[in-house]
Length: 348
Ligand code: PEP
Ligand code: MN
Image (cartoon, rainbow, N blue to C red):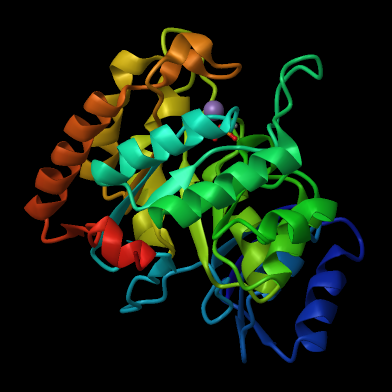
């Protein structure tokens, strides 16, 4: 590891750095006469980096050496692939997740599930527990919504992706979810991240709308460090100065995440756009930047829904988006994972 110390250290600050090095069995050596650059050699561990960064005398950790964090792509390391039902993300496999924002009625849930399954989705999204900005907005149909998702899984064979808001609900939601969704508002919720990290179910971690990429990968690190390696990162747009779109899709962030981590990265063009007409172009941009999949809000009649109606696209528009995805990912040698026929999936 290579550390840059602050120029004017207060009394005792250097000793704290050297004490920590000793405690971690790392051997310190200054590289310059000004004693600003400190090399630490020895057996590195993922947690060493943050421990040095926390010290007042440390300006920056310049090279982590062997102390790589669990999300980091070590040289030559292949993509981690995460499987959710028939969907696969990473390692050249691209899959689509689609469905309503919230689960509202059983009829609509089944109708949308069938529509997206027929048009290329392998997983159904839909919140039973909704993280609304206002406590007075619709909060989701909760346990009833989970039952509706279960029915949709049985009838269509789609995997279920649904949000969990509270560590106390992880067990309940896990009875139905094939993949836990951690929403943007909860990306910093360490107890929740640790709780899903203790399960062995895939986790879709959405980027906080005000989170830096470093904060995003450290949120993933919470889940990984608790023992769950099945994490898919989701870029869903960050807050910007411009309110034309709901958020600003960080396409550069997608490209960086693909290089910096071995984890699959998907894009949510719906919450980035906040309006239906921008969903398809943003989906294309995300895939072109290297995304391993998309999660998209689809609804046949957006005017009737309680949440995010403006950004829902129709099943017909979703079909076009799936066609785009198939063609785009083939350009760089990847493939859109496609469904086996419904009868084979449900065994009927
Ligand atoms: C959602 O997926 O419906 C949702 C609430 O998304 P986000 O957490 O990204 O706002
Ligand atoms: Mn939504």
